[in-house]
Length: 412
Image (tube, rainbow, N blue to C red):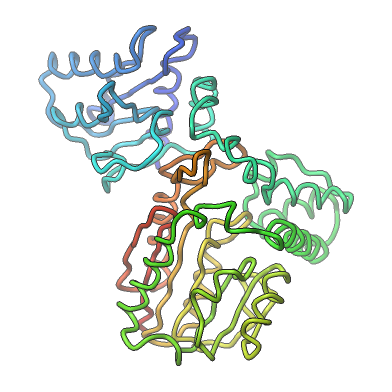
């Protein structure tokens, strides 16, 4: 993302400043090249009016290809189709940036242009500006996580913030959003408190452990999408059968981020060479009762206390989108502990259980109460690129209606 891109994204948002419309406020900027821009916005009557205006301009200028498109909201027309697709019927673009999904969008649609490879997203701080402009519409949408009282009331960031306050360290929500992993937060709090980094680091790790323990020690699958869908487990078994046609009973496996331990029985019954890792003790104690011969490690995924090239299978489900998680360090550790031709299976949680047992796909926008249905897909794309940099090969993505799997192989 360049300064040029950021300027155009900010310009697209600025187009609707002061607009008094009760309808969705939408702005679009199109870069014909690096010097020439055209733009449009919604009016007081029709959220898709930006499309009408921009198409008129494009036809007048006789344009068929543009450098970039910057659209604040991926709007739906009255018939439920995507307005951007209508635009892309008359022009092509080198790349496209999109801010937020339409507030009416509550599931994936196969014709969604956001699923294309050349689509990028606005950064979090600009997404928040778009939400602010359209607060009332998103507040009343299914994307509002307040519809799910469990997720709204029990969030790791809130528990962590309260835990630090008990230790005498006050930290704002804005600070937590800015310093998103343990290393950055340690450095920041050390400077803020004048305490040694080693002391702050240990305090952060202990507080995180307590926070995860508090949330997941009594966690019940009835509170999430696994209460009404077993597709995640069926998808996992399909992946295992593909990469291990003879099964995993005799394979040496490390599972990182076991959580409350409930899923272990479904995944590992019959397996004898198991290691379980988690930052919180509750799930480890639970899983040890089910698998007494397993090895358990109370540890962060970023610093695994095991030797190199030990395992044939590394599994980490719904962990790489955890709060204060350093994906680069964790992936480097995964690569280190896997043997040659070892397999990594990751997943990103990508669904919330809403009213009437509806599954809303996506992830929460940090610091807010809204689910962005594209966020899980973006995270998987980012993890895939990081896996490539680390050295993983043959990377494949396997989506389900509650989480998205990423699988790769180590070739050393």
